[in-house]
Length: 339
Ligand code: HPA
Ligand code: ZN
Image (cartoon, rainbow, N blue to C red; front, side):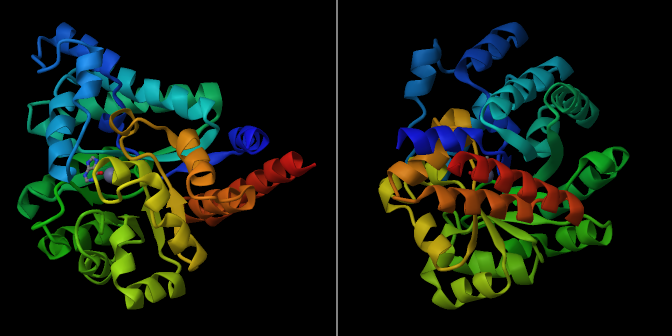
């Protein structure tokens, strides 16, 4: 197992489902809170970490919104993004499409430009320092009305070249894809690919409706699709990527343990599964750790891990040629480990 883990460490990786605000570690959260005069309910790092126990998505989102309230200045956005990118680089991540939730910041009086300038300064630093390939995917929040989201597309226009697409996140149950049909049609008219969180807590029908009504290119999570065998057949047939986040699912009670997660079953059924960290500071694991849990807890082999990473590179919103170059790099690294 040690050799397999070392070989996994050496593989180039992609991450397609990671919320920048969900990567703020408690040390930085408390520090920014003090600096910006934002009160938090936790007195120290231990107390904060102890509060990261969630019965469901709603309980997590309450903590997630509380945590992100400390991010105020351009430098704060830089610091949070930069800290994640350093860890990502150490994990072997060479391409990432990172989520950010502009409405969670605009609603607190933070400017869209403040957010973008801080995040993109960290991107530039990681591109220059680590050679990483980076894009941003702003997410709309599904508990908010569709109308309020349209101005974000105008705000994003000057940064179009940094944006891989748009997505949908937040409390899933009761906030179905059909509430966002017009918004997503507008995104597509502007030329953006779209994604949506679906089938995390919500039913398989939300996965199908995200495909049919929102015309998403990837499903974020999607694990509840397994409840509908016909839908799983379709995911396989149409090669729809799922950005699966097993640690998130375990920590939010979707599966009672990692060993019971269905990602291996979906993968073996032929679904284009990718593995991601979602909100790594809150769920306690970054991508490298999670891939190793796929080996240790699910019994996946090195070849399976290589295939999961290949799926990520193929599912990335990059020009075809760049996807192929990454897959080639992956296979060279995998073959070097086999020698
Ligand atoms: N699900 C939905 N919304 C989110 C999540 C998630 O896992 N993380 C941050 N926003
Ligand atoms: Zn997510």
